[in-house]
Amino acid sequence: MVPASAIAAPAEQRGQTPLFRVDHLYVHVPFCAHRCGYCDFVTVTGHEDMHARYVDAVLRELDASPAAPAAPQTVFVGGGTPSLLRPRLLLALLRALPPAGEVTVECNPETVTEETAAALAEAGVTRVSLGAQSFQPHLLETLERRARPAQIVEAVSRLRAAGIQRLNLDLMFGVPGQGAVELADDIARAVELDPEHISYYELEAKPGTRFTHAYGTELERQAERMETHYERVVHELRAAGFRWYETANFCRPGEEARHNLGYWEGRDYLGVGVGAVSTLGLQRRRNRPSLPRYLQAAEAGAPPPAELEELSPAERALERIMLGLRLDRPLALGADELAVLDAAAAERLGRAGLLTMTGDTIALTERGRFVANDVIASILS
Image 1: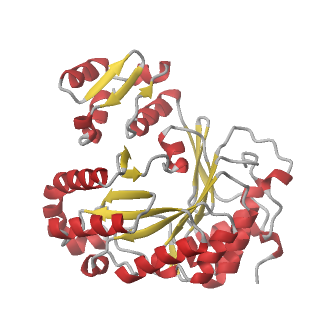
Image 2: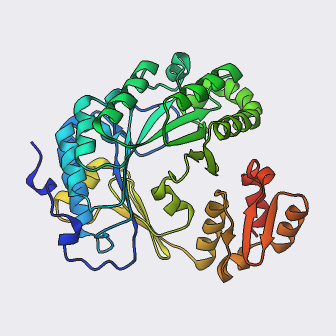
Image 3: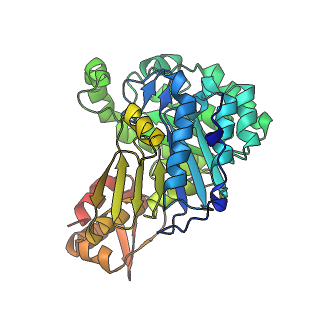
């Protein structure tokens, strides 16, 4: 049964005056059916008995936050696997969140039943981010993903039939066992599903994880192919009409992920839920990753255990440059950004054809975007 407090009053009825202008709200749902070997997000497996308690706790945290926005531009419910919640509970959570122009929910394909798709549509979700990762059965096995290729296609069909108009497919390259043929087939099958947005990430397996122990040698081989894989992804998706608007993200015209743009543009955001992060002005808050402690605090009427980090203007400026240069448009530099920029390095890389500076704006060139991490590291003093 959904707790009564989970059906909370909408944020615009709470009468709060935010301390900051927060246009972006992130809600973390940590539950997963299985923890993939490469994952380093805050997740827990099982604990279905805690799902309703957790939804109640998240809404308590949001209701108590002085930074809670009454009408954010975007809301993103991520995880974990939010679609693992029972449809009625998922609907209760989404209905209790403040209204926003863009509402995104992450889903795993195998969890998208007709009831779940209907709940997402009924709650006014405008975008679903579907964790496909690959359409190759053996690569899905390697990644420990539970969905089969047919379930990815079926999930897309169910979401469309329910009325979800914007769909993002999450995919990966650099997976152990992935060659040029598998990559080309994944790209083609993703395009065939006609999503509005595709995120194509390089697989990053953290040192010391069971995934790197199992596939260390193959991961080293894949590292040698990464540049070729990446160029193939960019070329094929552009040829299919997608705009390469961010390092790992591609969209149809006008279909950028507005929530993620908030991060890349260095805007303030509020995160609620176990392990969630907020950046408000010059303070960063990280809720601790312990689910029992998070629930205990909420049920005692206390704020969640968290770590606070005070940021300097220079640190925020560094972050704005690192994130802003991921986009395909010029980044405006204020005094703080200019202070941390290595002007000599920028001039040198400009001569090398990797970036351009015009007045107080900076942008990576086409060539520079393929080596963005190296260019950005070089220009930050």
